[in-house]
Length: 195
Length: 337
Image (tube, rainbow over all chains, first blue to last red):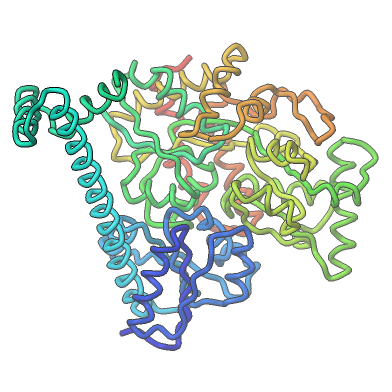
């Protein structure tokens, strides 16, 4: 159960990823969600905000700053602790796998932050999946363009039809156990050099 | 066998990087996958949770991780030390000019610092100094610096500044100085923003700086790994290899910084300010033998520093527990001469 009186700070070097988490937490009913940029004045910003929970991406170098705000240093008004529920290693593994760490104000009960961490894990994993799909799609598009260019080169140099050009590419790829896009790249590179 | 090792991009990560680059690991039948970690906290967590088999680690953080003082439960052990010394306290040029110490001697510099720090506290604008993590020799060296000037360490604020932010934090006046490892003091000096005021090796001679922390799970692979990194460490310590080492570390996939700046730490000739004032300090950063041998005396020194920083209570059993964390027996078994 998410409570609306909590303030959650999100720190992430990726602004797009931070925005996705911010939206998720808002939609779940968190009263106040603030994205803090990962810049040199981060400590001042966090201190001024006084968040109850800080969700930070593992890629952020600023994690060590939050460790400084822990009870160990005894220098801060509202010490935070890393959210480590020692009874739940699966949860911790899932968080680290998704790239997340969380710091909570001392005294905040574990069950109050669990749902926040659950949302963060889901959102960050979805973001990683989207990125993977996007880069695959980009790769496929680039491959298709290469194959089109190689076909064009074969057609003009050997006087082949489009269909024959493609068949030659495919046969070569099968014989050499390589991808059609790799054969196409070789043809395009060679044509660039010789042309 | 393939091993995942983590490090934070610093000069004293050299023994891990060279073990991979120069074939010391391969000679032991090991393939190293090195990963640069963005923070000490993340390195600690990834080692504790099994993403890493071993890591280049702040010696106090290794103890704190295993003693359940910092991060998730960990089974790490310390079979070797990687480096001694290497840190320095860099102060902003404005602070250094306000201090005007009578000489370069540590006692004079520390007294001058204490005077300005006391003035600033009385004026309600206490100085702010940066460290790299609560559990670091850097934090302890800042306290020792204060004590060398007979100053109460609570007279100034201590904050963590990630090394890659340190020069900007100094230039913008967010901190008045910081204690960092090589090459981050040299970077501030070269940029004209900082003055190296004190060296770690003067504040705490031969302090255990970084260790190799490995998971207990590593078991049989620990010995060959220790052998590979110890041989690599000796190679790194050889003055004949300094230039090559600096150039390898400078690459984009490692430190991604200027090779000349990286090389300063190994040269033992510390350049203190933008005008080129320098001081020969052969023990500024020590690698190789004999510092690689993990010594129980150093582990106990770390515990005493953690106590002085009130990170562990005086009556805790930490001193007894470190005997199962620091493992000179493994180092001996590796047969490094």
